[in-house]
Structure formats: C-alpha cells, structure tokens
View 1 (spheres, rainbow, N blue to C red):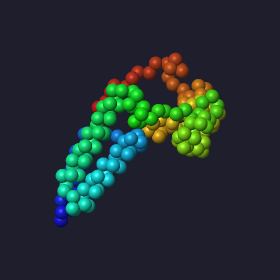
View 2: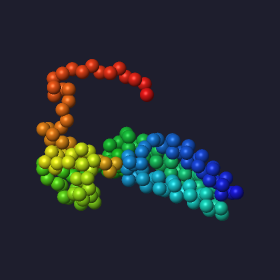
View 3: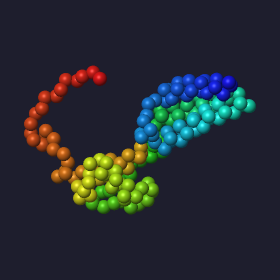
View 4: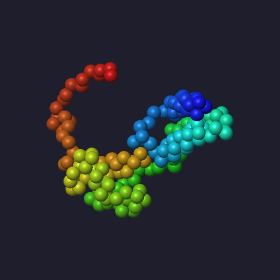
Length: 168
C-alpha cells in the first residue's frame, strides 16, 4: 500500500516539476536534457521503491535537480557560451562536395547515417547536396544546392495572397 501511495505522490510531483521545466519533445532533447531526465527519473524510482528512505528526501532531491535544470535553462537562454557548453555546437558533416571526416568522427556518425538523414529530408542524390549539419539536438539539417531546391512563388515572380490566419 505504501508503494502505491508513494507512486501516486511521485507521479503528481514529477508532473508538476516537468511542467515547470518546460515542454520539449524527446527528439529535441540535448545531451544535458537527456542526462537530467534520466537522473530525475532515477531519483523518483528510488524514492518509490526504497521504503526505508523517507519520501520527502526524494522530493527534496527532485526539487534540487529541477532548480538546477531550470537555472541552467535560464543561463543558457541568456548566455550563448553557457548554451554552447550545455547543448553543444552544430557540426558541419558535408560541405563543398566533401564529407568532413573529422566532424563525423567527433560526432560518432557514419557516412551511411548522414546519407540516411539526407534521404529522410528528401535528398536522394549526393550531387544535389550542398551542406549537411548535425544540430545539437541530434537532427541533421540539409541544404540542397540552388539548382536542386524546390521552386517557390518568388522564383516564378508571382504574388500569392496570404491566407488569413486561422485559429487552431
């Protein structure tokens, strides 16, 4: 019965703390966010299972980690250097018709994975690729060469009326 009460209490506490930390999709987590999430989850699980430890010890640890996470988020938002340390920097994987093997090695990503990400972004021909960048989130941004980019209304010198904004 005590584990059930601890589980419900911890779920409510985690829900509130995660709401305070902000919304991010799993795909958009940086390494720092991932480590913070694992640590918070571990503390919560430990607090639920360890019946010999008072629940409030786990709650205090969760609050401390939430404050640390929130503090780092605020510092990262206000200071580019802190953001680079915590989130990392983008790495150019492909540029000027060549792979950057040093950055591929640093990122521990293979040419095959870069090509897979390019295909997922609609670039099936390496000759159409201008630049591929590994973002701090782990996603690969792809820029096609000018001649391979999709045509736009600007290219056609036409004007298109913008649709009125609709509330979702």
